[in-house]
Image 1 (cartoon, rainbow, N blue to C red):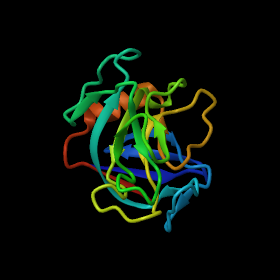
Image 2 (image 1 turned 90 degrees about the horizontal axis):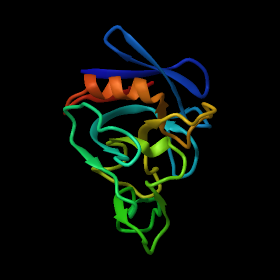
Image 3 (image 1 turned 90 degrees about the vertical axis):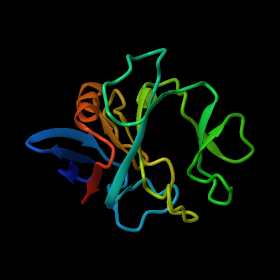
Length: 168
């Protein structure tokens, strides 16, 4: 199945799965064909869906055929372009710059990892491009795609290994 994200405005989009439409927030800089670390853009392209993390202390395990793991408080994601683990999960504390996946807000209670600059990493092309939960005020993301919890759960229910996200 191919999931298509098409913008409706600079920072809001729509993800289509068959005939179903799921509204989403995009990066604060909209979409970008030339993504780089920290630019706030959601990268344009086709990205395989790799797997799912969720906060078992906050939400029920989502139903999905994708690989899934419960998050731990010591999990982070390296965003230092010069580190050997750039754009990879790391254990906190970590020596280089990284973000914690165990957040106080609820945005990362459910994370879908996309294969953007992950399998074939390049320095400074961007990191931590996920599908995750929307912020309460529906503000744009730092480059991810954000959905309501109900919508992301339905997307996961409809997803399987090998699916692709297309951002146009």
